[in-house]
Each structure stands twice: as structure tokens, then as C-alpha cells.
Image (cartoon, rainbow, N blue to C red; front, side):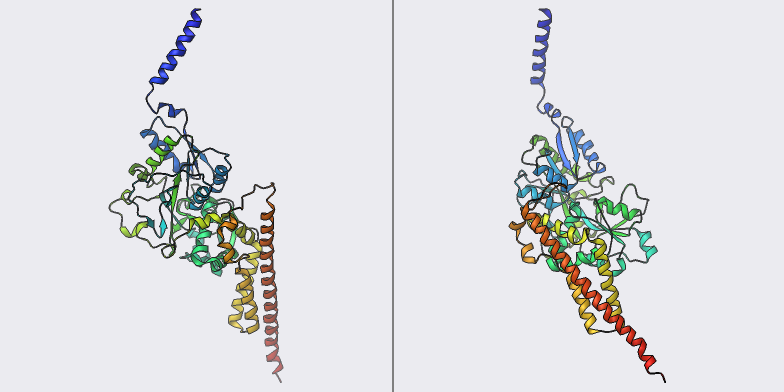
Amino acid sequence: MFRTFIAAWAAILSLLTLSAMPAGASEQVRPVRILTSFPPQFFEPFRAAFGQRHPRIALEFVQRKTTAAVVDILGERHRADIFWASAPDAFEILKGAGRLARLKPRPTGAPDFIAGYPVNDPDLTYLGFALSGYGFVYNPHYLNEKGLPVPKGWSDLTAPIYAGHIGISSPSRSGTMHLMVEAILQVYGWERGWGIWSEIGGNLATVTARSFGVSAGVARGRFGIGPSIDFLANPESGPAGSTRFILPEETLFVPASIAIPADAENREGAERFVDFVLSPEGQALLLDPAVARLPISPAAYPADKAAEGLPFSRDGLFARSLFDASLSAARYELVNILFDEAITFRRAELGRLWRSVRALETALTERADTQAARLVSEARAALTRPPLGRDEAMDRERWKGLIRVPRGLPRPEPQIQLETRIKEGIEENMRRAAKALSEAALRLEAAGEQAKRLPEAGRP
């Protein structure tokens, strides 16, 4: 009887204690779960500073690369209270699927656009919190040894001198790379944009599996240059001074964003974390060398920093035509499929064909041949021709049904048919290029033999 009384009294005390706890104390039981592509050196300072301000709210970080995180949220494989990443089209995909909650705006003092790019989603389903500069990571020792200049613009990467010296990641495996691919397609136009990426593809030394593989490869001297994002340009494992980062003349600043999924279980805690990230304290953390990001709040920068060095004063790649994030999201998988089929999976063959084009173009400067020049032009046109036309690529509704299918699982029949058509188009372009190049080489070779015989024919 006494034991029963003690047990009952203990239960009552427990209930009284819980009811007397201050508001918010139970939040410690349910942490704010943050799905992010950022590395620990980025988010740990935020964990520590947020913990000091809100000691009762625990943060749980789940790391995923952006492409995988989007699939996780869409497939409800990971319930998250926050989605925190760099690639804006990933947020657009989630927004289009109705998976993001609407947020209240936070006053940061940021302009509506930076370098021609909107800071926040106009519908406020995600908010920009930092700026990412997209440019080139390069190894100065490698370039000096090879006698290569530092590229100044995106089209510089198509130059023959960079053949075999460039590394990239695949846009299907890297949200960072996908944005760079899509940006070039939008700014330069579908046909010219694919032509630029085809020529860059002909200069590739490798295609890495992840975004950070580019800077790591540059640091180790596996190749000399690669498109990258500013905060990935200095890998921790690389030798000191092995990498440098440069923003091209066509600067691309894009906001890294934060969002709350519509099914967030700890909405209150998530809102407090968004408040913190966009607060003066959170913005100041971005300037920590361990974090190394550009705040979207102008007030976060030191007062003595030159105005021309700030991103707010730069003309960007989108200064004349704004980036269409909804178009990028609608054709996200289409661009990934096209890029992988045309460049990633055919890197070696593409490189051989482009080397032939350039060698024959050089030969034609020394020995004019109208027919051979026409054939080389045909080869160049075939290699730079996208397997799908601009009108199809701009049809947003048509591509929304494309999905990322895990390896080994069956793909929907319409997607199989599309991929088959794309492959056949690329193979036909390459076949035409190879045929034209072969015929041009034979003409120049025959002309060279004839030129050798002419002096002999004139001898007595």
C-alpha cells in the first residue's frame, strides 16, 4: 500500500513539474531539424551562437547534397523543419510542388536585387540570407607551369589552350553546377549556351562526383581550373596557397536561401532560427573566416570596406535579363539529362572531336581550302547543336513530369522515350561531326601531298 501511494504521489509531482515549466521548455524534446547541403564548418558557428540565444531549442543538422535533399523532401523520406541551401532552383522545385510554407519578410536592409538577381522569392516561400559568388577556382602554380592565363569570362573556358586543364562537376549531382549551366543557357540563349558548354566539355580533364571535388582536384594539381562557388574554393585538405578564386567579368552573385517546409513539425522553433539567421548577429556570423560567406545585409559589412568591393555595386550576369528561377525549376531534370548525355557520359569522345576541329581550323589558316573549311564549319555546327530545340526547351509544362529515378529502378515509359530520342540526337550530331572532320582531313592531306609534288614536277 505504501509503495502504491509513493508511486502515485511521484506521478502527480511529475505532472505538476511539467505544467509548471516555462513556455518553450518542452522545445528541447523536439529539436529543430535542419536539412542542409552546407558543411559543418559553416553551420557549427550558427549552432553555437543560436544555442546561446535560445538555450532551450536544440538544432539537429542533417547533411545532404542539394539534389538528394530535394528528393528527400518531395518523397517525405526526411521530415525537416528547415531547408537551408545555395541553389535557388532547388527551392523553386519545392515551391512548385507546394512543399514550402509562406514566410513573413525580415528587415535586413538588402535591396530587392543584387547584381540583377532577386534576393527573396517574390511569393516569400524562401528568403535569401547570404550571397554566393560563382566563378573559377584555379591553381596558380599549375597555370604558371603550363603557361596558361587566368580566365576572365565564361567563354574563355572554350579556348583551345585549356584543353585537358578543366574539371567540373555534373549538374545532375551538384546544385551549384546546375545553376551555372542554367545561367549560361538563359543569358546567352539556348543554342549559343549549349555551344559554350559543348566547347567547355571538349576541354575537360574530368567530371567530378561532387561540387567540392572540383576545388580538391585543382588543389592537388589534377587539373588547373574549374567552375566553382566562392565558399568551396579553398578545400581544407589542400596545400596552402594551392587555390585561388576569381569572379569572372560576367559576375554571378546568387542568394543562398532558407525555407520552412509546409509540413514542419516545429514551426515555432524554425521561425526563430530564420529570425536569427537574418538578424544582425546571424548576418555578422557570415563574415567569420570559418563560414566565409557574403551577408545580404549591407549593415553587416565593415564601415571601412570600399564600396566597389561590395556585391551591391557590381553589375552581374543577370543585369540585363533576370534569371527565371521558375523556368530553371520546370526543366531541371531535362537540363541534367541533356548535359549528362551530351557531355558527362561522352567526355572522351567529345574531347577528341573538338581537338580535331581545332587542329583543322589551325591547318586552314596555313593552307586555304574552301571545301575543307565548309566541312569543318559543319562539324562545329553539329557539335554545338542541342538535341532539342529552343521552343521545346522553353515549354515549362512539358518537362515538369521528369523525375530523378534511383539507379536500378524502372523509369516511366515517356521518360525512356525522351532519353532515347536525346541519345539518338546526340549520336547523330557526333556522327555528322566525325564524318565531316574525316573528309576535311583527307582533303587537306591530299592538298598537302600535291603541294609536295609540285616542286618536283618543276625540276629539269
